[in-house]
Image 1 (cartoon, rainbow, N blue to C red):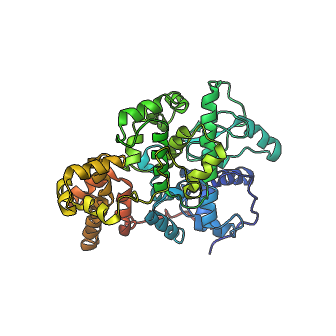
Image 2 (image 1 turned 90 degrees about the vertical axis):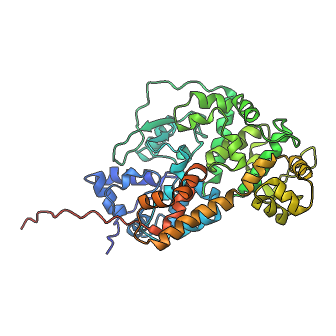
Image 3 (image 1 turned 180 degrees about the horizontal axis):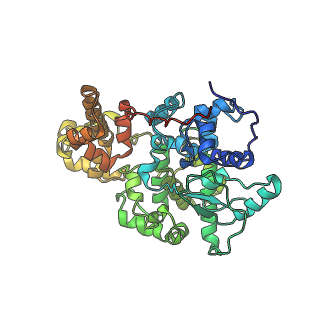
Length: 446
């Protein structure tokens, strides 16, 4: 039977779940971080996962859901709330199902956070002015959720660049109270404005509805044409995109930053992001959107990002951003023929037109014909690879991941290279086959 807490402190404004636990640990004087983890999550090492410990069901039980149920805790008190709106329908379903179970993969894994390489698990961020106010108000500092989100590098309340606390210690810790003696580099006005726009968008997205990523992508493509970065008659060019982004204020700041996001400064990720050849990390979408539409009203730009259909934008050529998965001038049946054909000539023969005509039509739609076929067949190839792995697991229920890597080598290699987040989705039916660590017997004093 779960032992409920006798006293449950209230949330301190917009603090994270980790912050509440750290404050609880400090105020109630638990013997160790392990004791607190075991009490709140039935896991002595819960403090190692600073985003969101796994067993939120146990936490909701011991707190009598006074702080919220599993869904509200996960989506409004942890950075997972920013990732959830970007998830595909299948991942949204997996996340919902996981909320009903106390066991299974971690929340970060379900959201594909490790695969991106952009999540700095060893750092937490804070504003020294906020810490001073917190100590005066509550007697303890707190970790604010807006400061822990991907893309939040400045405090929106004080305009101050956030400091980072990096530690691998297995402890429930709070921000340091004493101010650092090391000064932060001064932000140029253009850089400060760019960082504020990204941080504001990140805060707005926490706990929001599912985003239409396809519409966001199309809006960006039209925006690039409006700004002269690309045209309808020329497909996206990696060098042009990188050169455009490298001249932006946010790129300058990223180059001098200290974190895994520093590698985004070159802009060479934009082409792959728009062609959907690499994982869709929220940070990439937010940076690209805020950079491209930096001259627009901040609130209006955020509304378009969250609901593009409600605010259509038309470019000089009369093309709207609000499209479906494929342009309306290309019917779905023709789209499938091109995607499934072995060559573009074969597709042209099936359609009864010359291959030059088909190639010219695709170019008029603003895409390279070869890249179009690759993108169109991407989901089909990914599904075939996932199905191959699942069929092997179904035929060999006791197989290990090593067996899958050895016997499904082609499928695994393709997934690892093109859609790394799909691997965990493919093997989710395996479950966790590791046995629990046995509890050491304790001496009983009579």
